[in-house]
Length: 308
Image (cartoon, rainbow, N blue to C red; front, side, top):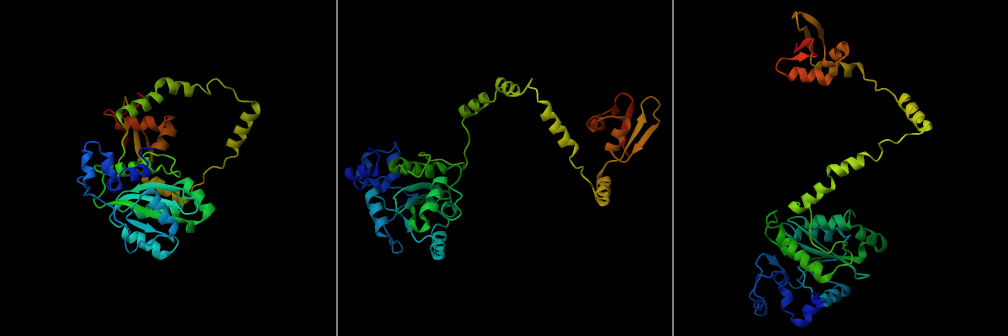
């Protein structure tokens, strides 16, 4: 409760104006009372001329003590979509998607030039949050508002991505949005597993576990009926029929080879391809390729293989 927006409101209305600074423990807490710890990289504005929120949205923002940068409603209107795209250009930040019917909401973040794509993904294409998708199917897009809580003008990179995630994490822990499955900020953007995580993953796929997985079907016998069905399926499988043109193209790209008798150094045979040579001497193509790459080019102790 002591980290909820209402608590901040009761304690000091001015403190909420610098939300990220509250999350940073290395700054002297006394500075917030005198508004010294100003954040220069992030922007939060009071309602601007283009922000005319509905009564429901206004009440929600007052109740949560939020002062967003932008508020967008009537989301299926093309002009609204264009406005979101234009006003979030070159910005990164934290957004909130509000269900104006139930007052449930979702909090997320977008890196530079990704806020519009986050809006489109969640509310138009419905390929983002599954919880949001179900809610949109039930209530319709007219019952939702897209609110930009805070923006960053700096380009968000792998190095400074933590700043954005810290801001998002503050809102997640303060507002506890019930549309979010996870209540801790994070994304795949520039993410790397820690050494401890990698050790744990390696342990999960240790030799012991691999052997255990391999032994799951070892020694099991199939019923006669199952084997017969597998046999019939293999026999009835259609063979791939290549056209004459396709065969000619394959021949052009194949490598002709020549085999010499190892002892007499006389020509044993000439072949249009490694495949043809392998069938002639009953040898695998892999063995022939390996012999070709070797220094002495000896094949099976009987021939010397060379490209023509």
